[in-house]
Structure formats: C-alpha cells, structure tokens
Picture 1 (cartoon, rainbow, N blue to C red):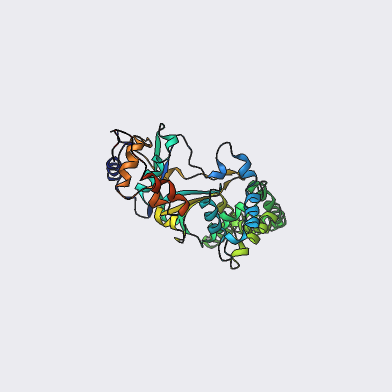
Picture 2: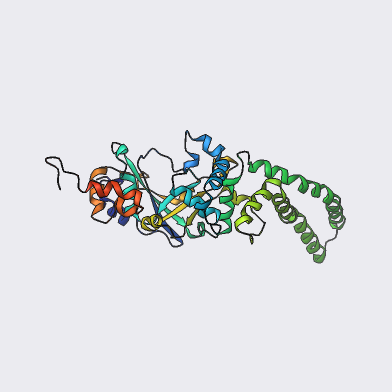
Length: 346
C-alpha cells in the first residue's frame, strides 16, 4: 500500500497513526467522498447547479411556507437548515463527522461509484472556528440563505465608504491646521516640543485606522441589505446585537449541531457552514491549512470499496446503523434474507 491509499480499515488506522494527533488548539473532523475529483463544496454551490444558489432564498421560503408543521417555532435558522439537509435539500452546509470510520463508509458506500477512486478528507480545524448553533456568527452565515441572489458584499462595502469619505473631507481642515502647527514648531529644538510634535503626528496617523474605521462599521451596518439580514436574524434571535463585521461573511465555520436527530447522533455529525466570497453566487473558501494530506502532499485515496464496506460491518458501521429512520432500514433488513448466489460467502 502507498502511504496515501486506503484499501482496508487497517490502512486507515495506519495513516492516522502516521499523521499523529492534531496540534493543540485544533479539533479533527473527517469527510468521505465517493469520487476523488469532487470539490469540497456544499450542494448549493456545486457545478451545474447554479440555479440553486440563484434561487436559494426562494427554495427555503417556499419550504417554510408549504411545510410549516415540520419546523418548530423554537428552531434557529441554522437548525432549520440542518433539517433541510437531512431531507435532501441542497443547502450551504457540508456534512462532516468526528468518526473516521463513518467518513470511510461515505467514501465507499455508493455502488454507482465503486469503479472510481474515493477520498477520505482529514480536517484539523482551529478551535476558534468551531462553533455551536447559538453562535452569532453562525446566525449571520445562516441568514445569508434568506438573502436574494444579488446580495453583493463589495457593493455594500463601497456604499458604506461614502459617508466615511464625507467625514474625511469635513475633518480635512482640522488636520491641515494641526500640520501647520507642527510646521510652526519644527524650528524649536527642546525635548518637550519634540515630544508634543511626535504625539500630534501619532494622532494624525491613527485617523484612518480608528476614527474612520468606526465610522465605516456604523455605516456598513446601516446599509439596506445588512439591515434586512439583521431583521432575518432577529426573527429567531431577538437578542442579536446589530454589529456585524464584514469579514465574517467570508468565513467557513465548523458547527456542532444539536444531537436531537438520530441520524446526526449515529453519524457523530457536524457541518461546515459556508459564507460567501465577494457576492452570494461565490462560496467562501476553506482555509488551505485545515486539510491534512500525505507526506508527499497527495490526497488520501479510497479503493477496494466493496471489501471496505464488508469490513466496516464488523465495526458496526453500515446503512442500518447510520440511517436509523424506518424508510432507510428496509433495503438492508430485507437483503439479509435474500438467497445467496452460488459461490458467494454467507
């Protein structure tokens, strides 16, 4: 076996031993994908599905309107997105698991892809990027799903700068007066005057970074699009403080969901919640430093899938154990009683 190939459970265990434990301050998660060529993107952003992200807000609102009894008034928007993901909707969530064997199952289970190399993805995520469902930043990124397709962060930022520039011009005269004062005292040589001059220059240098950054933050949160988003957040989180950092929109967070769903509990599941890059039609990027790879920089390839699936059953990992709902049990339970073909192992 090559150091990046997984053809059995023992291969996976050897790889985990080789890469060691995550660094302090990081938590390890896994994801299995049936095709190594697939990008690590949530369903709403996948290639060929552009119509989904363009209509994300309509799809979600239609679902809430048509199926109100399926959602509790106490559910946060993130919890509603988790439920939609559970029932097969394309969302801005991407499934992860804390269990490497569960991830291996998802890399190998789909028979339609048994002829393709799968991938086992290992992510060591900084603890500050791992949130719970009640996080304010989680509320912000979840609320993106209710915004229209023309939500454009760059335009909002540009519009926020207009009042700030006005303040710059208003303060321009004051700044010029201060500079004239500095020039007037430049000929003075004593230390106290030099100290005053230095302090005045420090004040001037901080104008952009302090006064105007505070002004920008205020005007950014007053923009119509941000005000609408804050309104959507406060619908299920009235205590939300309406001060959003624009950089939060460009994050990808790992979110631990409540284990109030049997499937999530069995799969030890959690989610990556994707923000945006510049505008809503483009997803935020997972930081490169999160993904662990083999020493040669290669991905961890999953092969020999049929054999892996049989081996995983010995570890209690199967469709029956990972998908406990009634509708998911039928195929596996009935297949136990299907007569074996001649030569097959029982």
